[in-house]
Image 1 (tube, one colour):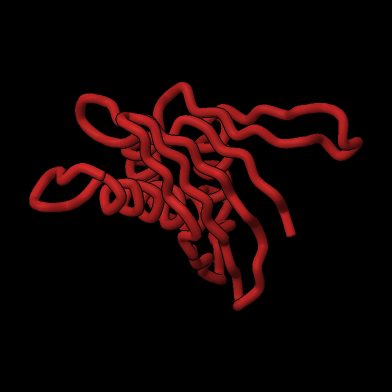
Image 2 (cartoon, rainbow, N blue to C red; image 1 turned 180 degrees about the horizontal axis):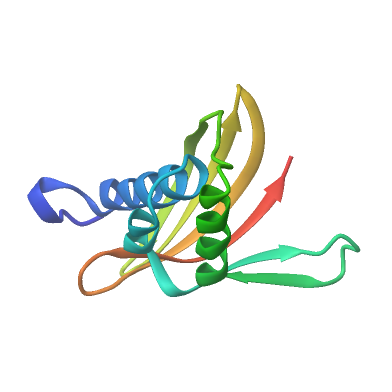
Length: 132
């Protein structure tokens, strides 16, 4: 683990990126600007389709457009999502964070977020998940 800006470690910076851009930005009604700050433009959310055999992909630009449209229609989260960091594994400029997302005390997702450290900051580049 390296010490970065103002004595913050890479782990601290990764947690801040995930909290600000993903938990607050995506799940808790944050701004599109906050989302864009922490996500790489090439980000894709990967999932498994309902039949269990097809992999689905959702690029960040589609995800943020869905969020923008939901906000314009007045659909904003009424219940806050909370994040529990289970593990952060860092090797050089690559990292993986395993987190749990909880809503109203109930576990809703286990997420695996993959990040790269670019010149200016850590960026989320990929996500896979399990829905509970």
